[in-house]
Picture 1 (cartoon, rainbow, N blue to C red):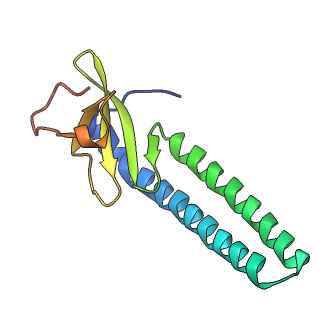
Picture 2 (picture 1 turned 135 degrees about the vertical axis):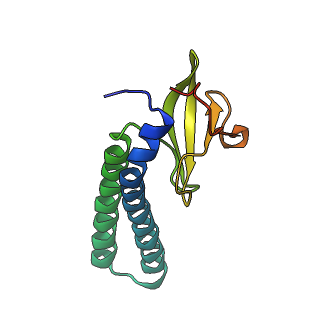
Picture 3 (picture 1 turned 180 degrees about the horizontal axis):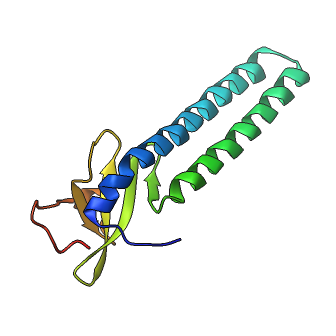
Length: 133
């Protein structure tokens, strides 16, 4: 279900969001490992059986990754980049829709940006910024 986040609501949700993000990131890293194993298998063996087993393992890992992204986005956040660790929380500033922006490693929501500007357009949230819903 869609909803806008206030800064306080986003910060309250952040521990759960971080846990779910880390789960998705771990699944993405697992995919990279299997892909590497697959490349090695292709170039170093003639065994179809080993290749097919790894390919099936990769398919399963990809499915689990996308399921973890869906679970993460069901919290209300939007994944902008797993690789860069960027998530946005929909919010409003006065009557304008904006994103509350979080980057992996940050312990709280400290930035926001307009809909059409990305990470480079981040602006700090002022302590007294009551304009964000």
